Image (cartoon, rainbow, N blue to C red):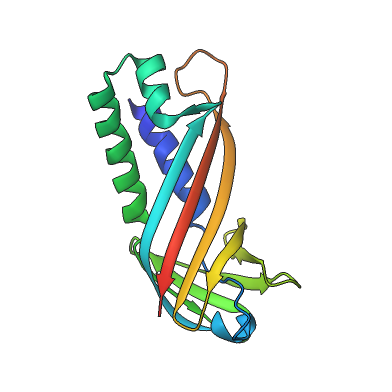
Length: 171
């Protein structure tokens, strides 16, 4: 069980290191829209273990019934969503400061030349690239996909884990 908690905490740390947001809008300047104080309104997660959904993985590999597996997925998603509560300030000098789940983070940010990707470089050394799904002066929707390998079932064969996170932020 401790290994599962460590896995969840590991996913959180990978994703937590730096969040920020942006997306394309023809009516405004993305470089201007992204600036300011943002609040995370919601965070949606999709987790795959190999080619299985997290729900299917719990049922197939841990023998949980569908209601038990649904409860486990809901608990995991609630835990992850709680880790993304907080605020992020995007500064004009391409720096940011964030407080997520009560923990401070800071670093630099940049937009791709086509304004479709936001790259966050945390002072902790982590880099996260977000696809910008939507960006206006008051709302941003960002998506990132993280992949890692972890031996979840202690069979000495690491499983491929893919975590897709979609964040909605508002000013």
